[in-house]
Length: 320
Ligand SMILES: Nc1nc2c(ncn2[C@@H]2O[C@H](COP(=O)(O)OP(=O)(O)O)[C@@H](O)[C@H]2O)c(=O)[nH]1
Ligand SMILES: [Mg+2]
Image (cartoon, rainbow, N blue to C red):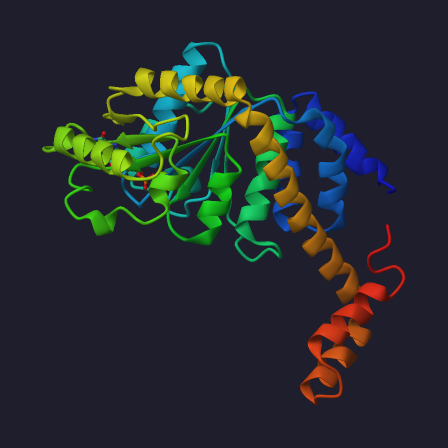
């Protein structure tokens, strides 16, 4: 496929570590479309090096605070950190009270940290796709760890979690009292469970409840039992253990061969999404033809499957 030279230049600048280029590139992939795809194509060979860590949980459990604490920890260890916040109420997005924004400032001005919040939910292919592309860019830009903060609800978040190597699910004391509050599926995506706000009453009980729940589920025997760790993100307590557990999980993925399996699964998912997006975009590029088909389906002159077949068989729609 032909690439516009300015995209190649932008890609080179991203790969060379330019923060300005990275910011521009992120805006481009949020918008999507052919220019974004050309850019992603150019950086793709340079991805696959970062440890991608998902942070998920209900609003207010402390995801952004934990992301900040983890980033500070990794920076002290000499590692660079990219953060993508999908949570619209995240302090990273400016939707936080003053105290949080002050805490975040611990990271500002450090060239080894780059923070981006995803704003555009209207993009074709959805926020999951845009987030995946943002992670690819941060990976290409050379960040050692890429943290992705998402509110743990809905299909988008499950898809975003699937794109992470290590998913950390955050709960707070009391979460285990009502088993219903532990969303079905959330335990399945967790590689690590954190009971944050352990400065509050009942954290030890919640840790025990979560451990019991994990033991009851089918997860035992899967090779990795998610550790349940208590933390006080606001003070940094327990952060080192979380970072160590995340590193241990990555090591487990590598040694067990699951890293390669997961990479293949992700590749298949990416191909599926890319194919859908590309095919739809090409099919709709002939606006008049598209509208005619829609009208024909509405009047029952043609059925949707036959119309889709017709579009896919139209030269130029799917041929590269
Ligand atoms: N008591 C206590 N409060 C915390 C802790 N971690 C975060 N918070 C507070 O919880 C609120 C929500 O935190 P935030 O990180 O924005 O949560 P998010 O919505 O999950 O990203 C903020 O007021 C934080 O200061 C903690 O460990 N203990
Ligand atoms: Mg947040």
